[in-house]
Image: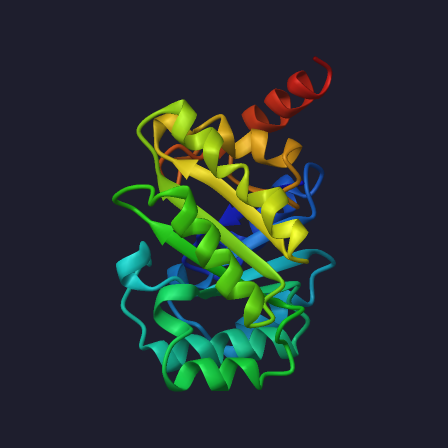
Length: 228
């Protein structure tokens, strides 16, 4: 499954993109940190659409468009959950420690609707460390986990794919791939390794993350590899 990332400043622009690409996928990530105004009425209009939405308010230090306080980000996600979001993307680093840990675990959306995401824009830690991260997440009762790290070689990117079946053995859905040019193919291969979805950007535009593929190219590549 391809998840199309939508990072737009207004409701109207998001709606235009939904209309344009709905024939290719029904799964969209809403990058709410890109909206000029994050208003409840806007969120309700978006989430009333007949699609599956992963709602994300990315932290500035993890590639977010602007600086939004941690608790405010969580409250936005919580409102999205109440309005029927498919998944709520919560950053492992900034939201799963201290008081936020207990707040999130008490949420009615934990664990079924919360996707914890781990990003490392500098390097790929040892596989043993990443497996340890997933084991810890499993021990906390987490069901959805994303690992995206910067890779410098194709073999390094391939090694990340082993995290997907490893997560399944622990009862988790894991999305894992490498960032950067060397990780490009892993964004499609992860689907063959058991990842429930991968992220793509609208064709004809610019990627939102290093090595990200556009929707039409990703779809063509997936179909080609599936028939090999």
